[in-house]
Length: 146
Image 1 (cartoon, rainbow, N blue to C red):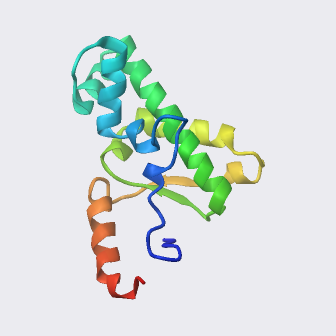
Image 2: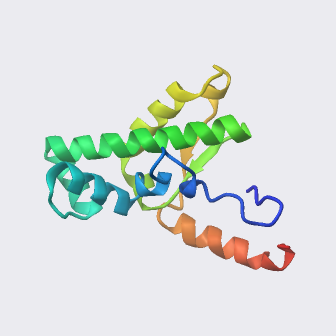
């Protein structure tokens, strides 16, 4: 895990996904709800939207497509910037195959060099617990942060 000069690196969800939004606002549970509301005018949580995709709801599918595309672009940016050995995804949305599969596809298309497209993208076996466990691990070493 790369922490940077002052221990603040690694907040990739807060990188810019465009001129007016952060990646997290497009590729998170709340972001999915925002996209769906923009497309339909209806309030819906991300869990319900995922359920709707299983019923082939066109606007729910479009919502996840938009989110996955932005997520994939964010992953591609990380690969381009850091050239890591592997990208490991965690958190609740990492359990939604439709998002992850499409995001991986977009990431592979968006990287510039063919060698970067070979970067493995895996889903953490920790699932939703990955974020909490990662935060606990980082807090353990907080005394080393400047």
